[in-house]
Image 1: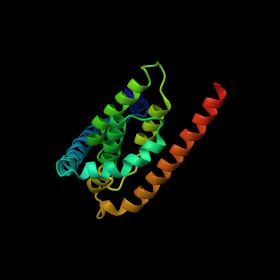
Image 2 (image 1 turned 180 degrees about the vertical axis):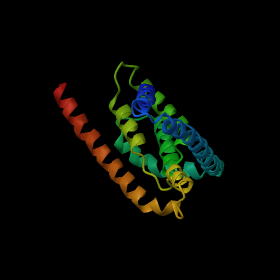
Image 3 (image 1 turned 120 degrees about the vertical axis):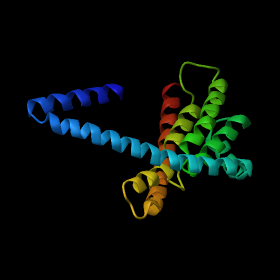
Image 4 (image 1 turned 30 degrees about the vertical axis):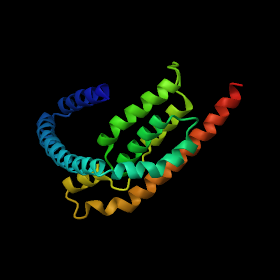
Length: 193
């Protein structure tokens, strides 16, 4: 990503020089910097607010209750998971449901450590590690916090209007990714027999 950004900046400057529009490039740099700072603070505020809500939900054992709902599903979805790994996966999914990817990260790292340990630290990812990575990446969201903050910052009068489309698209991504992992896992296991 850093190289993509670097070459983008270099190309912009080169095209500004070639087309004799360096003043436009300078104005764009200054305007973009201001927009980036405004965007940072608006998203930061939303993330702090929802992280606080998540902390309250954790202290009130709401996330634990949500994770208990998911435990039976995950025990069937993953291959021979440990209770600790399922607990971490459940907490990760609970945080992602609320659109709190930053709060979900510690639980995701913990789950991956547990799956790696049960994989006997082999140099390749296990089925459970791959499934969890896909599950985490295509996370189902009930409250799309970050996107709503971006929409609000861009002047949307109803930033939460994307609630239903986000729920539908994240559900479709989740189901299709789980199906893909299961299909490729069966193909891989047959190939390696």
